[in-house]
Image 1 (tube, rainbow, N blue to C red):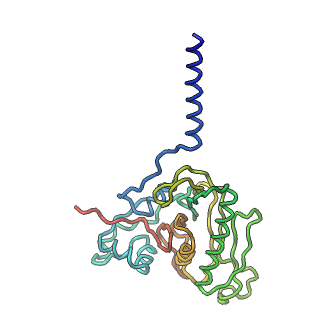
Image 2 (cartoon, one colour):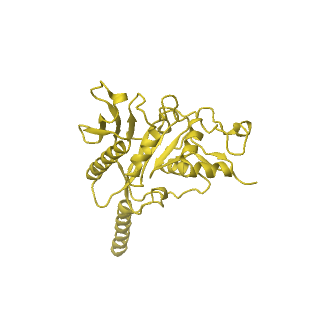
Image 3 (tube, rainbow, N blue to C red):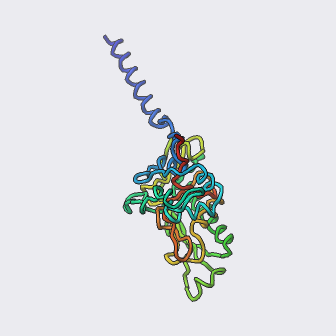
Length: 281
């Protein structure tokens, strides 16, 4: 009986040890891309802010133009996917109009977000986030220079983000303004994940900046003389591909009169809209 008791205890200890080890290092398989969804919706789905978002099917020729022409893509999206597609009449594209994208403002899909899966590379979360904040700030300043502006930076007291203020290059909109805000962002405490989703294009564990926390970005409330979508694209060219911006409808000012009427994800210099090629009969 004593030997049986020892054997039982040994097995129990082995099971406990395995459970502890698996809790520390095992993980579910990373979320794979769904080939039936657009890249934008795959990113939203992997990050968990896809509530209320869906893809719009557009004709093959329009889909090709949307991917190859930034100007056409922006015009297409300004109108909430209502702009007539090549080869179609306005009535023929009426079904593309989503009548405002009814997204609830208190949910992540209704907010301007920064979403990222940052490789841990052996760092603790505080160090990784501090390095991300520095890289983010430099990327935003590089974008401002590309738009002909110099800026000075004021970091948050807790070093979780920064605001950029214009010092030169935008006299038309900043003249007489002591603190002319251009752009700001904040990165909340990241969550540790043992594996990143396929969209992140990284292997191994990561720090996830979740849309359910307060990782956000903002622009000046006033129009500053440039397309905010183009500015985000420029910032993203200077950031790793595992970082994404998301903007809901009517948040990004395209010019002095128009805002982007459709939701968009920005990464690696590209604007990704929630559209996919129409399924062939």
